[in-house]
Amino acid sequence: MKKAISKINVVFLLFLHSFIPVIDFVKRKMFSAKILRRRNTGKIINGFQFVGFYSSPLFILILNHLLNKLIYAIIFTALVYYNGCKDNNPIIPPTTSNNTFAIYFLKDTTLTIKDILSTNLEDLVLADKPWLSQDDIDFYDWSSHCIYLKKDKSYFFPDFDKFDYESLTNMSWIDKPLIIVANNKKCYASYFLGVFSNDMWPYPDIFDFNIIYYPVDIIYFEWPFPFAKDIRKNENVRNTLIDLKLLHEGLLISVDSIWIDNADTTTVKYKITINNEDTDNLYVLDPNKMESELFHYFTNGPVFYNITNNKTYESVYKRTIKPIPPDYYDYNWFTKIECGKSITRMITLKGYSYLPNGNYYCIFNFNNPNNVSKKDRLLVDGRYWLGSTISELIGFNWIDSGKISLQAVTSTKVQKAEFIKQTLRR
Image (tube, rainbow, N blue to C red):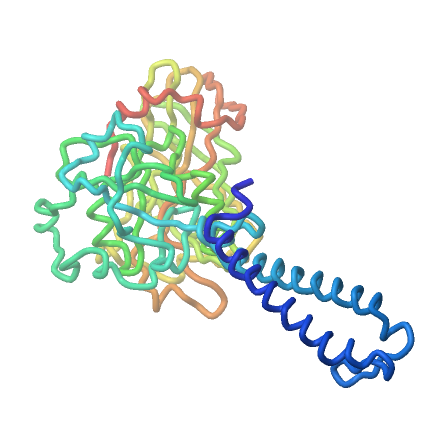
């Protein structure tokens, strides 16, 4: 427990206590002048006449004692109330001062993400004011890690209305570090990634293409290492967003079954379940309403990581149908999933290379079109979910027999050195 009474509280208590002699003096005058002077006629106090025992000196002494107790009770109550109004009150804990979510630049603006790779987060000095705070956020989608803003991105990116493809190479903030803070704790680092950046770092990033191509009220934090523990899923951040009533759960994707027809060009049939964990009804792309080639324009399908040879296998030879123009989408492609409900779909995808026998991890990255504007995505009976989310990681042993036994695994089993070396495709 912190100090029960601070210095200022002591001063406040002494200040109130200083009134006791004054009150005692007034009481003595009152009793001597108006009461003791009338011993034989009864006493009159505040308009009431006291006779018999009630006019005796003993009763007056008792009454005086009770009045002193009342005065001390008033002082104590005032002191507690005064403390209760303070943020650092030891009796009534703060309710809002710690429930803060904010994103900061560093105070030293010359530092890049590379410069802080080996630096402890606690040793980094933050800028005086946050770049983005909880007051700027409408809500945070936990499944996609999209931050839905109250204002548009021009408030956070100067000259945002002038951004175009050519300007991406000259953005002054490329490799600029960001620190995500929740509940007054530095939780993890992030940075701005450029399309022409030479290096990638093991941190979430804000990709410059995503700055432009996501709607003007959304900032998306990307995690490009699908087989590694996602450090965006920080429990301190999550709990703070819940306390602030800013968290939306979004979607939860699971891969339920996989069938492999192994050949020089391998075909994979897979079954997924899309769960709506949100409080809103969500509209998502439905493979049953689209051809496989169109659905897989938006997603790569299942990705397999062979633990034995440290190789990744995905459908690099798949055929896709590209919408015209590329940012086109059709509302008929979507299905509404009510909150708390789910849909299950069986999907076939061709174009994998031959999968050798061995132990594998598998993930599936589900995507919705990310360019649906705010006025179009908010519907009477729900909203269009935007962004990308990765399924729960599963593991299986593959022997070229067509039969697979799936099991849930934790992403922490994959070594960091393995996924950092991956060649990431944009």
